Length: 71
Image 1 (cartoon, rainbow, N blue to C red):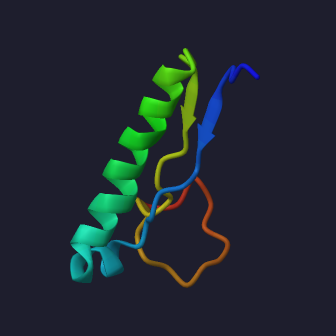
Image 2: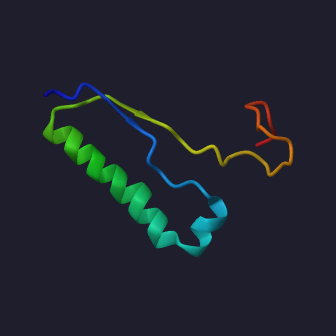
């Protein structure tokens, strides 16, 4: 079976937690992505959609957070 593309949603994104467990975040976010790219390369897959973090917005009690919220 040929892999045409991948969608990468598998990162950790808690800013607060990342300060307490940085190695865990490095392992999942960096090493996990490297492993995914290696598998893509092995399968000649050159298309990836990477979902970046939603933790760029200022802390607020207004939920859900809208894209127009303060960064």
